Length: 633
Image 1 (cartoon, rainbow, N blue to C red):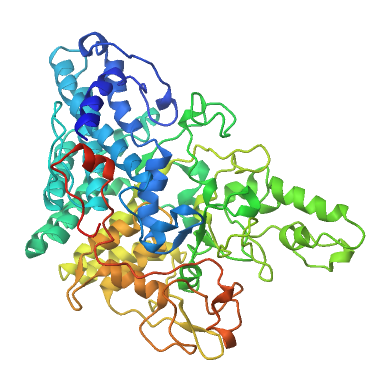
Image 2: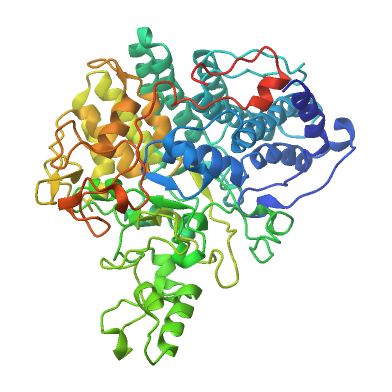
């Protein structure tokens, strides 16, 4: 940090003009100003706008978004799993040497450094008339908002971190406390709120830029983090959060209906989006060779890595059957969040695309053709079971190309012999320009990544209200989200589908009815936001369960993965991995449940104390003798 941060300050001035005027998608052209001075460079309003655009660019990094924020938000709660070395995020064995941590840390501190350089330049530009007061105020608000979000994610992930707020630094700051960092987040957001424009005043060309509503959303969430960090004053912090979440600016946002459309490729920057990282398909072929440099450099490798190996040849993420079966009957979020064996892809964009659903992807077409070409015994059984619906005997050649995520009889476990669950993230399967490693090798896409949306605000608001004893109001706000999930007709009882437990006959055990309003909110966080960028942050933010003295995140991860404490019909569930006790991926049979030889790749470990904070990168500690590692590392 001592060396790197000094370099960042210099680099910021040299690379400030990375992105000119607007966000999404013309936001993303680049101009090289290496070697120019601030006085010579920032002489027009366009150059000042580009200076702020460079701050947004810090987020436009797949390693930061996927291997940083998404891994933390989604792997730690055990709803999603990694196929590969990054399984450390699922079993909590990550260390400060993990290669993604410096990307996480450095990209956010680069962004913070760009803010600290930009603020005085904008101030000077306003004083000299280079920009109008209105534009200068807005850009100042955007810079403060972005710095606040960066400290929000740093503190949410690592706890206390160094607070760098000035243009010049020696890079030797000690860590501030988590409380102090979130106090700074609140301060930045409150300052930004008076400078940013409403969503309704934002030009179409500027979609994706920070707005007043986004600042109130992060202010409210940061106030809730203050309640976790400062429990003695929790009531005051929840009251402040509720005030932020109740701002009239949120009247300009609405829940997208139906739920499937929230994450659609052709519905980006929609009425529910509050803060959305912009990507752009400006050219290039979306392959490895073209994706890291202009014009392909505005792409992300985030989404196709979550698709099944049978489609892409990769299959780096897969889902937990415990999540799949936890959705209550009738919840429309289920299959458009996580696809199980036999489920189609319900994305309107994928169905309407050249692929026509799963059946049109290159690997399916090629596998089906290979099966059809082998007309004499021995038949192509591998492609028959993998790429047809197997509706007719293999020797009739009358089965159809598969149009589902595997079948009930033959789930898609991958093509490389490594274990997966048979479940995949359908929230990330929306970009019709992608094929993964198959066909044209289009792995890199322009699907924006939404970090904050209105549904999260409503649920966080409900949590505040319930904690403050305003249960009726909290239930009303929560039911706005839940009602959409059930197409306007949510069931009278609140229940999490089936437990990850089976009875003596191998049948699923229904989950108990939930009567605690706070537990209802936690359940809604999971079923609304899993597979996005928030869930683990919201669980850790919830703090300590006063009735048990145990952090809510540890309790909920255990509950969601194993069910309530009880005696299993076939003995205690092993802590190392789950043999899911029912459904099409259950193997071996219930009668031999204790035989651990048939697991299908879904691991489970209890969250150890302190491991809900990630370790600081050891490379940063080596540069700054004042920085101390988190205690569990």
